[in-house]
Structures are given as structure tokens and as C-alpha cells.
Length: 262
Image 1 (cartoon, rainbow, N blue to C red):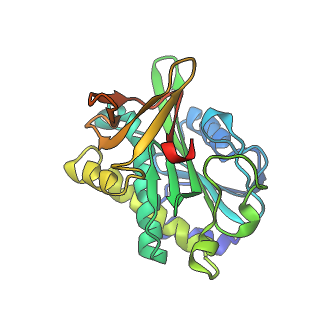
Image 2 (tube, rainbow, N blue to C red; image 1 turned 45 degrees about the vertical axis):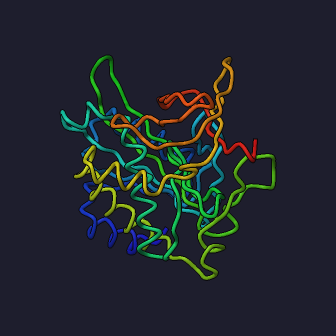
Image 3 (cartoon, rainbow, N blue to C red; image 1 turned 120 degrees about the vertical axis):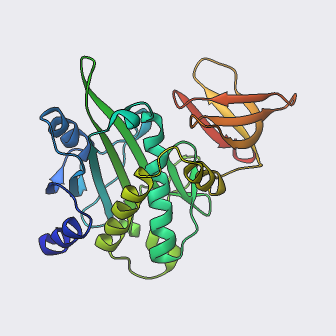
């Protein structure tokens, strides 16, 4: 980890405090422990390598030294934000999408609720978790993992969305610290616009599979096929079913996939 480059990002983005590691199990796990100890708002945990990185449903996230950008931001939400915790995953999605567009000219899409796709291939995973002590919210930890170079990609497997990296998308080297700085600044930007009309419109404009036929796969329930309409004011996915009924889905134990790939 280049400490000088990292400190420059910390200073330019008004990050409260930063903990950096050459190797760590999971930045989210470290951030959860720190939040439980009353970490300041907008604190950062970042690592060159994760050995136990994870995503939704405890999927393993590959993080090899220097090949990806793996970090977690800790927020101390205000009263309004506490009422809208479900919107922090898409907030991260908007921040990453905009950073890639501004910095690299990549027009990525946000797959509801929390993946970033480039040409329908996954380049970034997001895992947002709340830290509670009883009924007391100790903080929100927002974990983001972005594939920078080909060394960050997992072996070929049967994943629905093939992995990709930023350097493959732009065909040149990508500076991790520039990406980090842009994402952090966009997190600040979209946090100030949480739940606004602009927030939802921008999310909808860059939503993957909008207007396409998709399948919602739910544990122990029958899968549902419909046309992806967009997002409702609570951040739920809106689908038009095959019998023309509008349905909404909350983030939970379900998967979204395009019908053509199912």
C-alpha cells in the first residue's frame, strides 16, 4: 500500500480516519468491529489483499495483492438516513458507476440491488451492513470491491455474470488511488441527495435490464418472470408480471437474472 498516495486521498476526500492493511481477512469485518467501538463518521478501512472477502449470501470475493480495490466506508447515519438504510447499497452503486464514467469513460450499469456490470459482466460487488448493539445502531459499513486488473478475477466457473476488470474494459493501466478518490467523492455527493428525485432518476437511468424480461429467483418460492420496470420510492424493484400485474420486490434472499441467461 502506497501510504503517501493513500494519505492524499484521505485529505482530498475529508475522510475522518483511515486504517490500512497489506493483508486482512475482510475489510467489512474490521469495519464492523471499529463501528462497534464508535468509529467516526466517514472512516475508511482499506487493504491490498483480502483473504476472507465476502459478498451477499456469503459469497467469496477474490482480492489479490494490488490487483483490486477493496475498501469499506463507515457512516454514522443521521435520523433521516436511519429511516432509509436500504438506499445505501444503491448509493454505493451510483458512486461507483459515476466514478467509472468520469474517470475512465466507462458506462457501467447497476444490477439491482448492488452489483456493477460492464457489458453485462461483473466488475464490482457491494455489501452494505448495519452494525447494531441491541436496538442501538452503531453504524453502517459499506464494503466495495472493484476488479482493477486481470489478476483480480476468479477462475472461470459457472457464475451467471462473468467477471471482468477495469483494465480489460479500457485497455490500459488503471490507478487504484484515482478510482478510490473518485468513488469516495461520489459517495459524499449522493449521500447529500439520498432519496431525492435526482437519486432515483439517476439510478433508474443506469439500471441494468430495464425494459427487459428478467427472472426473480426466491428461496423456497416459485420463480417469477416479468419485465423490469424500474425502482419505487422505497428502493424496491418493480416488475410487470406476465399477466400485466405490477409487483415490487425488497432486497432479501432473492436473485435477479435476465431470462435469456436463465
